[in-house]
Image (cartoon, rainbow, N blue to C red):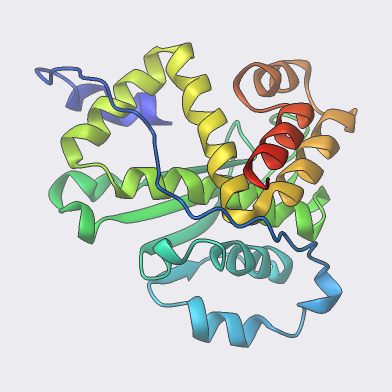
Amino acid sequence: MWRYFFITQLVNLSLFGQDFHQDIKIDCDTNFYLLEAYQDSLPFYEKEFGHNKKISIRDKKLKLAFYVALRHYPELKNVHMKVNLKKISATMMAQPTYSFLFHRKEKRHYQIFVNSTQANNGMYYKDLTFNSQVGWIGHEFAHILDYSQKSNKELLVFISKYVSSKKELKKTECEADRVAIRHGLGKQLLEGTNYFYNNKRITKAYREKKKIYYLSPDQIVTEMAENCK
């Protein structure tokens, strides 16, 4: 999706290195989230964390997962975000809105797209447990946290590298997994990843992409162990 809109914006911009590094307080006390324990809590979460958030999805389970994951990212509490269903090639995708070029990073808006169909890659968000959805959304929040710390020029440079370099793609996605783990969502990420690898409906191409560009279950366990010593 980045590829189609932003390519014309990259002309005459000089490339420079941009490490994805966050000074994050590591939260090792990760809960295991059951939908039954949260299904009556949506009004509370919308009041507490709904400022500048627009979730254009009726699915109550997904809304709750969004807010439970957001609780792990206090840095994003007041950031403008919206969530929409859309037919995309991934399960979820986070990016700034197209108007970001005309606003300072403090005023930037972001969007998370959730794949609306299983037909694209065999993965359907509704098949994920509530706990796994929290982890999956937490991964997308890690991307938004990264975007929010970049200037417009830095973000454009990042996009150009992300869509043109497999090395940059892997670096970015693996680091997003690590950031989610450091924010206390390791168990959620692990459960969702294990489900992905054991889901026979996943297309071969999508399965191979995840193997190459994201942390494996063993790597997630290792990251959790190293971060929680």
